[in-house]
Image 1 (cartoon, rainbow, N blue to C red):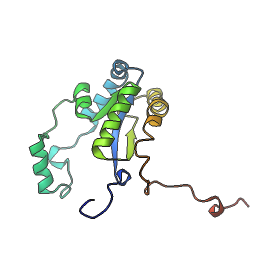
Image 2 (spheres, one colour):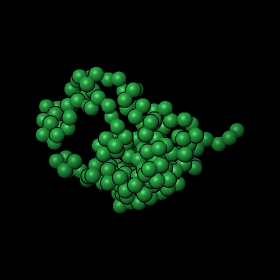
Image 3 (spheres, rainbow, N blue to C red):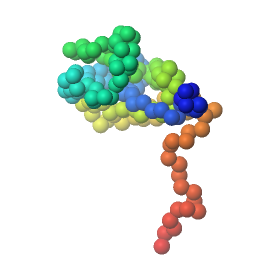
Image 4 (tube, rainbow, N blue to C red):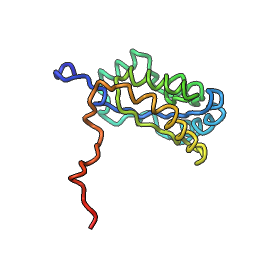
Length: 167
């Protein structure tokens, strides 16, 4: 953005993140580990050679990934701990999730977060719990992150005078 002479507005970017919120970090593991491990180990049947679409990454970005130590192959079995440590999933108590999401959003300079709150084989009542905890205990604490920036990309309600009137 600097090369283009444009401001580094965090709202110009979005990222998707699997999120699992429970009362404590330990409860998150008890509630969600089996469902998250099922998803990552059983549902993502993608041959590593096809993990990126042709032309998706440049030669320079591939070199940078290798230099940074990113694995060329995913482990045969992803564990709960490995997924948390790698950031593939952000899970834990509301405080843990808030802190990790804030860190991720700041490090990426990203203003739009797309959450995956239903992961793998999660039953509806657990997905509901996750969604409610996220909505009440996490989301309100993230709203202030980029208050100094204008979000030019999110949809806004149509002005009242422009809305259709009932017949």
